[in-house]
Length: 516
Image (tube, rainbow, N blue to C red):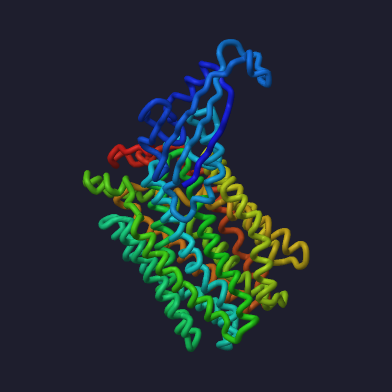
């Protein structure tokens, strides 16, 4: 339980304002003299009380106040418990500051939506953030560890590129089963995907060769890919219209946190023979956390409403083609640029596993700051120009980083990572915002296939070209044209979805605003 207590001297009119029920962070109702409780809001418990005493100007010589009329000394105390399991420390400081602010007018904050968020919505986002951390770990593990596993198994760059490409075939699992999210719900499929991905990743720790590792990761990576799509679908459906990009940014941070956990385990490859295997076994620790999350993970309101009303599930294929092209062309460059980074640092620049970890952590620090900032800007000013500009800068500086060493490498990689991170909250929501509730899972699975097809194309091409040219950096640079075309397409053809209800783009869905 947390509390905020603030003492102030107020006039009679200011006292009346403090006695008005709040309608910004939550909706209050009066439950007694100078006492209020919550009708709706992001708290499991909430109580606000005022203690009021008259101020005698004649006897209170310490008061220097030129306001006319009677004055009152008011002590306002708010006791509350956030309905945000595990992640509540992230929001506690700004929540406390907002509760102490005498200005109760609903307004946009950089860290919170204009609309009142319900307790169920708050718990849902906390659940998605927790599972997103797991998905981040499971989704990058093969790319971060394959360099060290390949050395143990004695295979070259081409085999690595082939393995990374084959692993992408696991997206078929996402394609086949994500449509069930439109039938049975987001919650049960999310929990199932997470549990299976954890177990199958742990199986990779016992891999006798690169083929076994690739096979187990084909299934596990496919489940992790579907998991990220489910998280995006659920958050888009539940979060208020004024903060969808901000929420995606927060979930991106938690996913990135999970990915960084893999990076922190990489030094084990230097310290222990086969130390990379420990990285695959560690996710077993996620299982009890997942069981705990499953106890308070609610279903989205939009899925429930669409199912009850048997809403249509028609897909607008023109929109799908537009977003599918952007996903495919972006993957052609972004996937090999990311997956071969450790290979480039290790083989071309002779970085140790510890130095690779240091590099990954340092270049990612500005990116972690850029994500919430980009989410706020995307919600307030729009997605298209921010997304297209960030993507263009990210790929240009990424390509440069593969040509440089020393300070130039670190600076260009840092700029690239920062802009790439800013692209995510601006653009990821498009894959769910433009499609009806009862087809979002199906569309998500199809777009996963398209994205992975682009990634596999890029990985196979770079692996082949690097063997022919002898230069990994040059081969990756040849792919940079694809995402630059995407940036132009975004500006010219993508609709603006910022701060608009999903039903604006999907009028056949039941009317259900994101306001409490």
